[in-house]
Length: 349
Image (cartoon, rainbow, N blue to C red; front, side, top):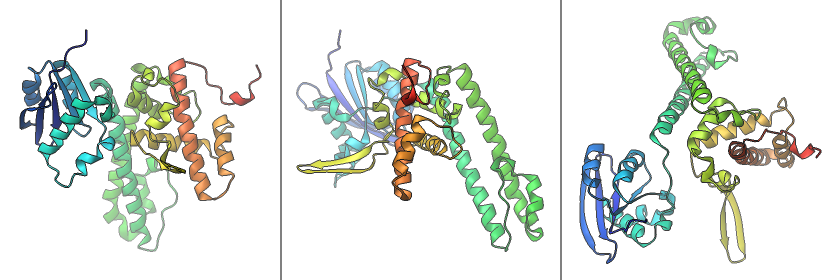
């Protein structure tokens, strides 16, 4: 039996304090407004007695844990997609109180206007945190390696091409003699990061094999490793959240924007909606699949046909197109459990 909603609470989440606005569901009149500390304990105490409330908050840094707290206590919880609520942060008289009121009134009128998103569960969030932390560390290592090469070049020397994972103390012999003492600490930092990244890779592989065996359906595809497969499964969480696999491409922001009005129907760059890290991983996989030494697959043929138009723009479009098809393919394999056929177009029935 559906519980009757008696009030809607808009919550504007701040780093230290969060503003709230309570509106009566029937009359639309203001019931209360105020603020509370953005801490789990304060949220639990405030929402524990709001069993017939609809809670609306905007997606952000604090919304994952905040929504996990309100869901057991309140009748409904919505995490609004900030892209669809531009009128809030575009308001010339913007304030936390007004934002909370806007969230409450939109949520009271029609929750569909919120384009609500689903935050993953706590267990999945913890596992995904390892992948995100690894991404940050890889970025830091890349910056350090680039800085090292730049410093060496400034003295008229060059470092040979090296596997990033192999850079360490032994690389000191390749440095100009006058820079060895100064740059050895930089080398040691790179080496330390490489060890930490390798440790995270082992954790990710173990999690994929032991806790998320469904990733094996995704790693059937050449170029998809356990890192990307696990990130995909953890980000989407449930294959049944999409009725059609093609929706996965749009969910990850790999479809073009659209500007249609009257006779005009422009096709623009991709939306870049959804999870940026997973989108980046899929693009990197697509780039690998389009390399000359990559095996022949339907995905590769599709990308090469687009790239055949020539030029850098066509090549970029090819990579994005393959990444989009890859997102759809992975969802289909996950949902159906089918055996991957790299050249399905040549299959003879």
